[in-house]
Image 1 (cartoon, helix red, strand yellow):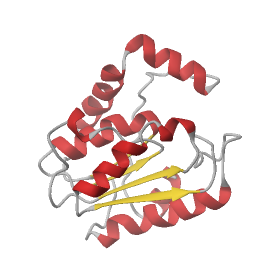
Image 2 (tube, one colour):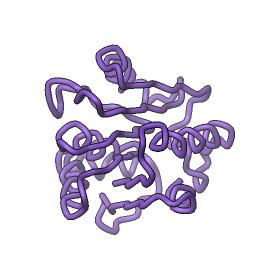
Image 3 (spheres, rainbow, N blue to C red):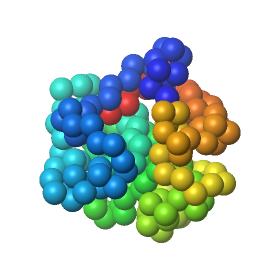
Length: 178
């Protein structure tokens, strides 16, 4: 997705939340995160974004949702958030979603990882006039990643369309993804 956004003229930054470590399976990634902590993953993304302009749309996939959502909820100049495969309870980063900051949450209906976050996504949509939840049929995690067996071409194509349209619908000419 980053390459498609760049090709459309958006500025995209993709921090390395695992600091160069490449893991072979989703379970390995989960075990690694358990060792270092979700807070550390979040702060790595926040630190990476700290040197960039704050006036941005923040995007995250799976664990990348942690820093993207925190940045969108806590930076006063955030323009919006695009969250895929996860959604964190609002109270993790503040009392509520900031007014005037649009957010989209995307996930597969039967993804067991996203199912754990579904209540948070539903609550975000219920409590914010600027929030949308998009559910796609399927049961895989990281469905948008074409390099993985979980890739769902139809859902990923629709996600890509929505990702490209989202910032333009909110007056942005460039998307910066963290």
